[in-house]
Length: 144
Image (cartoon, rainbow, N blue to C red):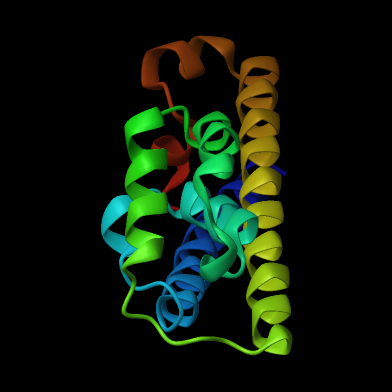
């Protein structure tokens, strides 16, 4: 089970990265400036999902964006960038698809975190001394 979990983690890492890049590319047609403001893939998906249509993003959303990002300056920067954005309008159907795909990426990321926690717990159960010596079990079994 440990080896399978490690292989699944590696696959999830690649898939999540690839899918997050697709969300970035897709949403960048609408709000290209956001890519430079939000670097983290998971946060980018959360923000894109929250904003949806950039033309409706106003000052009253700064507090919600701050809660999402944990950074008021970035939230203000996003609102300002949305006002001056060079991106094109997306149809409601396109925005729905971006929203749903961003949610899928977030769900996969959450599952990846849970799987990693499971793997750590499993390694602590079956090989606690080895786990404490080596640390991350993915490095231990990456040669399999």
